[in-house]
Length: 128
Image (cartoon, rainbow, N blue to C red; front, top):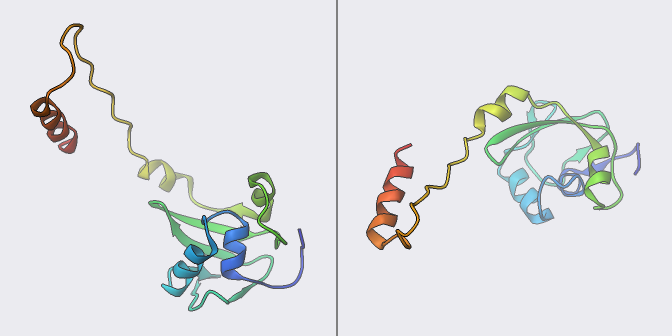
């Protein structure tokens, strides 16, 4: 890991394992959905340095990340976790989580659900 210098934003997001591919990170940057120190980023090639704060959406939550180090490669997740400090509010993560649905149980000897039963279960799940 390097601690000084500059690095492309899309490359760092990929190194830090926030996105599965660099192309996905680039698309997010080009869509003006990433902020560097509160300013909208207009291109994936924007340079970042240690100490910058990034704000971007990821899977139903808003991530607020402070850059601690610039990486040199996309390594394992343990190495990627050392590149940033998560400043995201805890309450937003718990608010966005949905409670898991319980699997409906059937009585012994009832057999597999019919197509009509499955549709009724789907309607029931959609209304919760």
